[in-house]
Length: 209
Image (cartoon, rainbow, N blue to C red; front, side, top):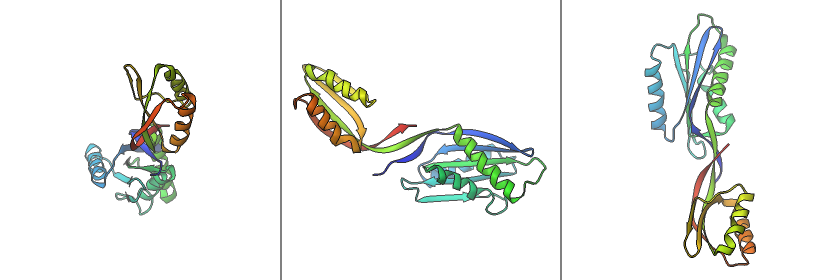
């Protein structure tokens, strides 16, 4: 289980280069089928554009990548777009850059720069997070220990995902997997071993950047 960057919310950005408009639309896609559907939807939305170039990275390890120049000179659009996504370390993301031709040829280098910059502009309008391996702990304590535990959580910027107050207190917390051992130690020391700690789940969680 390794952490990786992912799209939390897609977005759109636009640049103009020598009167050509480059509109980058970025979306979260977790399968190749989702990416293809998204690309097709952008082609329908911008049906009157000269080009709708695309690139995507799919998989927890970014194992599936595809790109398309959609009529632009080979290697001037799709590949540079894909390189931006890979350079950002993003997974499960698809981008379509729509070009409305402005009447001035940009040349090979100009196209590479324009498509790359358009993707960067699109990503600037997205929300990106880290998908990290974590675990959910259930902590049971008496009312003497709850203040100490909440203080420890606050020191780490954590809040319980659930709090149940009866004759005792039960907290559910979500923490990075690598912090589990240290968290157990700190809670045990703070409550003089009176708190019960049980790992409920191992999972991935999204940490906003």
